[in-house]
Length: 146
Image 1 (cartoon, rainbow, N blue to C red):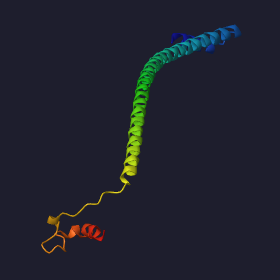
Image 2: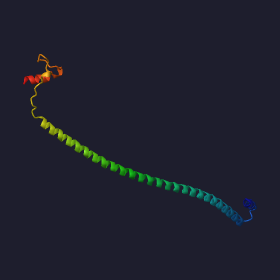
Image 3: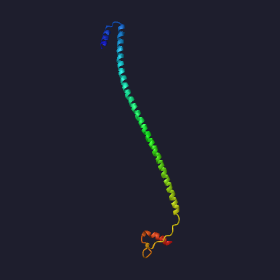
């Protein structure tokens, strides 16, 4: 900084007001150069940060698009599964309805009178009054009462 020393000498000499103005102008130019260098460094740092952020934004956009594509794929799959489950549900409803109709029809047919059945002789013991198995007693009682 020989310029600063020279300016300091000029300030001590106090030659004239024009010399003071020149000295102040030279100091102002040096300050502007230092500020310019500092701002250029700051601009370079901001440009590097900007490039990094732009790269990150691009990466995030690609990731977002990939996830949207994947979501559309799974949504399509879910719709297909829902459609197939709906068909299965309709088939099950149809089978249940037919089974109910069959049961109702069979119940109507079952209400007719059953023919009288005679108890075979081998189900009675030698005396003929007691059934062989205790579980058959109610059945034999019904037959005997008719």
